[in-house]
Length: 220
Image 1 (cartoon, rainbow, N blue to C red):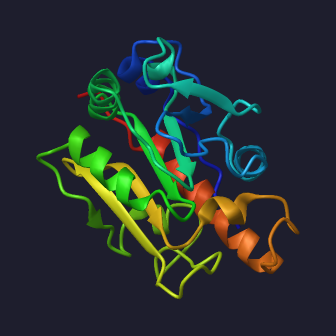
Image 2 (image 1 turned 30 degrees about the vertical axis):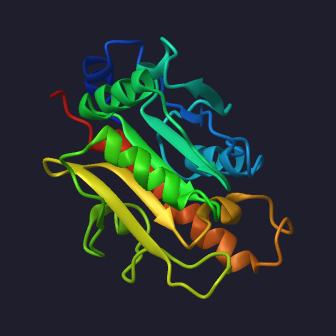
């Protein structure tokens, strides 16, 4: 059963300097990748967060560019796609500022994004490594328990599912799901030939991610 968790709303406003919206925003980016992939994924995740926790999440998926003035209003950013992602120097600076000020980014490789995503994250944090997140980390236990780490949702090439991260101090600021297609699992059941149990597993980890993003933020 999911725990009833309430976000520290005052902390949110202090961290972001804006109204502090409990919302998930899909990042629009350049480079040729389909940032709009998995259209039913975020609506399904948002519904699950609303129904399974006490977090007062906004019910509509937001869309944001890294250069938008509203960027810092969103505690949770989501990037996905199959192709190339290319950030401008301004976007690199803005994403670094967003993350160091307490923001959280979930990147999901929809098979094909890996090489360019790793390159761009290295530009954002040239002094921080993308490392495998240990299975003891709270994202795997905060609401639902994943003792084995990130689950394998959708098969492409037989590689094991991996969850990588970039830490700022003890806080996980970037979480990157690779060779799992977590976003595919969030989509409507029947979109892919994966069993409903994998959809549920993906949704549960997504609830963990959003809950962690909200409850782990601190004012730098």
